[in-house]
Length: 220
Image (tube, rainbow, N blue to C red):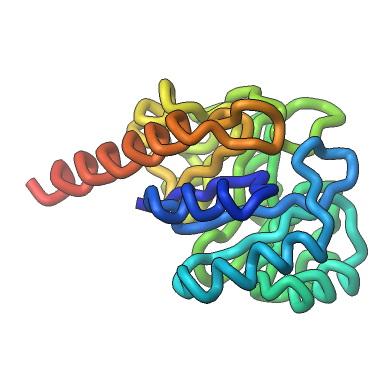
């Protein structure tokens, strides 16, 4: 089971997510996002997480932020990876090396294939993230991604599936796409930036149960 809970803004939400089994947490540094978090607040949250859950993978989410600033924030906040959710070029992604992965919002399988050929992919998972295609929106829209396109890509690379996932649909999404992992923000929120404990725990239970079922079926 691999699940990323994104848009974390409080230590309480972070600890609930990790206690329930989340493997990755996402912290949003895009100022226009309702889940925006100041780097200094992120650092104070991360300090506690590192002492209690050293195995957690912590991800900074950026939109069109200069590479030098991304790397500086990663270091200052003790984050592992950068998720680049804007219009970053292949060259900009390459400049950040193994510490960054790109979020794609493809409209078609051909576009997805072109993106995979154009952009550098991390050698270790996640290679990239696939989100819903919605003009002018850089993730967190609640719109469901194209699972057919995502499934095509998931058979080729270890990707994170995002886009409109909820406790109600994540089992179907995993079964159809079979991604390396799943990513949720708005689907487990009470209000933007604040998680609903019951929905978050139910989401992670659905993820765990579905991956277990798929693992058992593959062994038969």
